Length: 223
Image 1 (tube, helix red, strand yellow):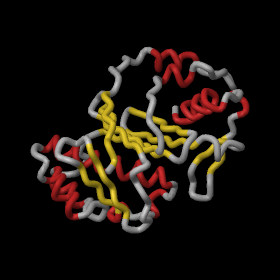
Image 2 (cartoon, rainbow, N blue to C red):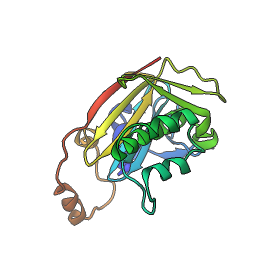
Image 3 (spheres, rainbow, N blue to C red):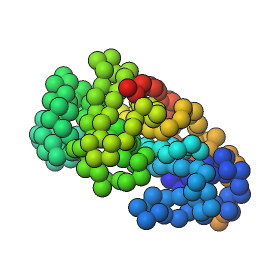
Image 4 (spheres, one colour):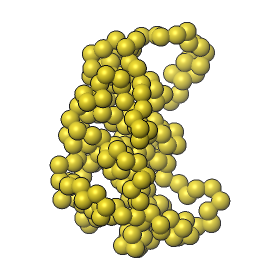
């Protein structure tokens, strides 16, 4: 599905044939479209039941999606969060653990996690930047956000963040240097052509899956 989304994005925005979409990877492992690395930046994320793509022709972007759930073999939310203290500041850990119910703690944990992941993916340096050096701050109403990175000293006010509350208790967060527009899967693949024979049975099974309602989107103001 990820490659299909990349191919559909390239065809839609670069106005090229599906046959001309050639994927390569940078030395850092970031995928790009051969011949268009300076024209279109994109980022893919897989998590739970979802695969998402963010793309921009201006600057860089990052995306992350996760199911909001306690991983298997973890005894409690508190124990799980404390085990992850190497990737969160003490302020972030306290904020997560004081969020209220177990479900609210898990949601707050993944809000922080996905924002950090989207941020480092947009910078293009992956986990070479320790996540603990990146600190998130949210306003009380959740509509304003700031992020500090003590290692890279990257300015953040020109970035745009969005939070997407997806069906089946999934959360996605995206980061780019431009404003967002959201497309459906059908819009992304409507200009694609068949490159090789497909198993119609598998495709029919995919099409029979129930369509979930669209996500709710929240634009986060960066301070």
